[in-house]
Length: 210
Length: 193
Image (cartoon, rainbow over all chains, first blue to last red; front, side):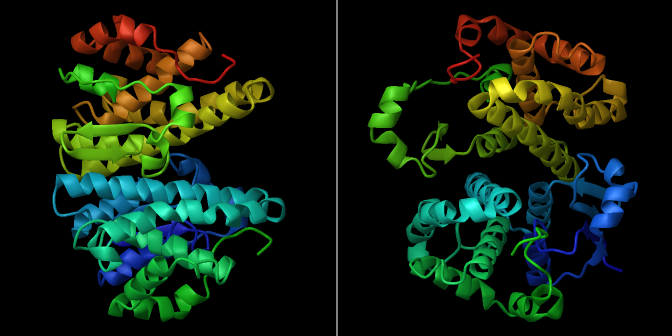
């Protein structure tokens, strides 16, 4: 009986990074899928600390906030750098991923048609920091920080995979990131998860358009 | 982070960047995300204010007493960050148009923190556990800023008022909050309020 439960909408959204992390770490977990209707009508929302999902259970520990969940799993599975210095860098990187994630969510949920041209124009500038970090770390052959995968890597990988779904080819002028995506996606357990129907059939997000 | 450092008896150097030098100089291009703050701890350079808070949290034991509490501290800090972003959007983009709605919604945004406090020794302790965490300094700052921008906006939140008063009375923090460097530093850099 897995100790982990993810309570979320039937989308990738803010949970796919943690799903990829758990799968890659050989963990199983339970999904409690929340439909939009039951969310709007039911008591779950009022019971959530910030009135939002995801809600995550690790045994008797209940957590909210997707990045707090990623950090918790990072601590649990040793995915938080090799020492305190690397931990700080992992935090810095994850916060940068979060900034793009919010930017992208605003686009998808508020102003896709009007905003998408500008978004994709600005995308190279937003991706540059991650290319810089990769180049500085064994010329892009390793991870974002140090020699081992961190929760920030799963978070960035998810973001990049989503971008490829929403705008195929948008990473073509970013060979370092394409190689990074390919290399991480080839990790055996992660590869199996990414090929699984549960992942493939789960939409990136829940907005009406695209 | 300044309140955290002061309360932990630390000193630090401030390198003040004017708007002009920021827009015209090479510093922005040298910053990982093209943003400030930039923080130096010896030879470690960090960006992202919450990464800096977490680093200092680790350094000074302000991250809960164990991994379970650490996760809760993270969850709380992320909630503070959400309000901070919401507030920044108001200040920097749409203050006049947005402020009525913002202050109407504020009680709902503050409720989670009241809930956390009540559940932890009925509001007499900290957000998580028995010791102060970086999330406390972050929430304290947010609440103090709200009191500056809209005096009285916390009056219907006695638990938070008591929390602010209790933390602000910590000796080193109290001294810092009374210092000219803090008192004379504006909450933000937007033109209006």
